[in-house]
Image 1 (spheres, rainbow, N blue to C red):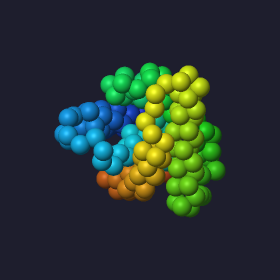
Image 2: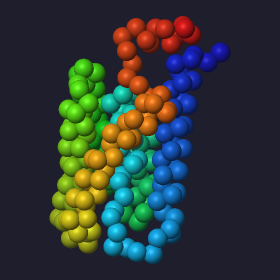
Image 3: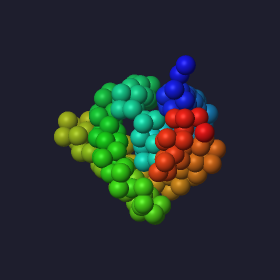
Length: 179
């Protein structure tokens, strides 16, 4: 018999992969002709960061690295750069996860936006060093602001629809014993 915690963990991992695939699929569809509109939020990054703060066991590094690498390949970005930076940001948040259980949401929001900013600025810096053509700084910062603004919506969706909540003290034992 499969342990209920292990089954739940793998189901949420598959859900993460499925949602990231669905978001990426919708993103690469040719739905609009205008290229001068507002950039959309980075929903996959927001979801991964929200989940790693709440339940880090649902977000293993190898799955996130593979997902972001595949998204980079599909969207024709430099392969591996964003994946490496997202993994660094993910591990930064994972190290602070133990102290973030008592953190108010506004502080969590600020921390996540700072991690997103670090990922974006790190990517721009590396691309600038290698003289790779980039999207304008204004559009990049606008996408960062929009991603930061949609983070509370992603968190609310994750908690209230998907059930990705922080593990409370004593809840692990209750889940393990099937209560």
